[in-house]
Image (tube, rainbow, N blue to C red):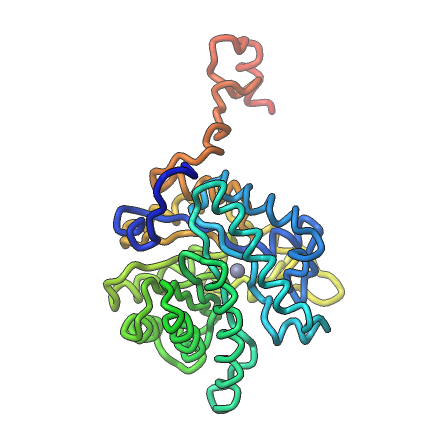
Length: 350
Ligand SMILES: [Zn+2]
């Protein structure tokens, strides 16, 4: 990307081809030792802003066309739980400032981000007013920062997603709304994903789809259902884990080889043995493109190598492609003329 090139909108970019959006920042920062699993609140934005800046740069280098501000779970309810409600506005404004800096220096799009509030209750109208107020404050700060668009993500109640969408559209921003589907293949109010996404499109969503919770294998059948119901641009950002029919979500995966005191649920910090390799993510990218799903990314668990593989799979050549593997130069497995026969002959014994 060229920072001096004229900035084009998300929708213009999607009309021309795929757009890659890296996500899963809280998981990656937890892995790096700067964020606590459990609450998963991005306090790192205030405590180690330089780490967040570098993470954004790493993902843009790897192929992300978007810098999404790290405001996931930086909402009033979560900050209350960790006793830092007074830091609500500073954490949001700082996350947006960090993301904007990297977007401006790289030419990437700048996205605001809101997510599930964990207080929505379909049977409680008062809770819905609370949810709306939480979204309004976060969307207001994102709009102040001049974001190109706003992501509303990981909603398992489609009605909560509809409130998020309404708040984003009232702020006159482009809205990317992604639902998070747990073990049931319906939303928590029992809407099919196809129906839920159709309602979101009818209510003005610019891009609809799924993110988080499910790996490529168990997200794809739901994406097909959505594609059959909507004609707008679609989004798909799975977690990079080998979920399957019996254990369709990363919370439902069980590790039969290893147990710890809290049981055999490897979510969230012992999922390593289930990780998708980069080739599986590349294949997901090609499969999604075959459904004309152009807003693509990887959520919790994503590393820059996944993002580069995804970007390359859909025809992009990010800066990190300079270092994509070339095994022809390997000491034993290589084909280069300078690799001695005695080395090549030994390759099968490695
Ligand atoms: Zn996620």
